[in-house]
Length: 237
Figure (cartoon, rainbow, N blue to C red):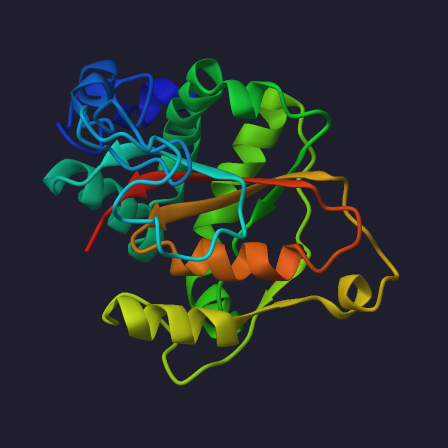
């Protein structure tokens, strides 16, 4: 009855249907071109001879085991991320999480992880208060239900000079990120531990500074072995 009175409309094309992101618009969103770097997930030239480290990540620290992103950047994909992240479009979390499930179908490293946990990248307390939710956690809730993977939150986002990474260059992002993320005290003090296999979840992979900083902290927990990174969008600078 509610769906009849208040039908869903697609965020991109406005068509009425059963989802807030219709099948046609989902299919039209740009995917990361293949082949990809087997470490950071970036599209790489077919002739590049080092598939485990592309030109973009070869010289950067490697605290996570692998990273995969679903979408590349264009006007439509950026609109969806911004709507979810900045404009209270919480209803987009479900269809975007449904799209993320395809990464498990095509990524052996994700499928083969034994008893993993999902860890969403945290956001600043002020942002959480203003927004009312963490977009990465919203994606994780739906993914966890579909995949049967528990969601844990061992990380904190600490205040820094720059609350957002959006307008920082690559060097500034890295410096700010390593100050921003810390383990919660119960994990830092060894009172709580994590399983050996972790899937770190975020909405956007730009320079990778955020997920590198989070993975660096997670590596401090005894017994952590594999840290896979899953993000909705890759937006290289």
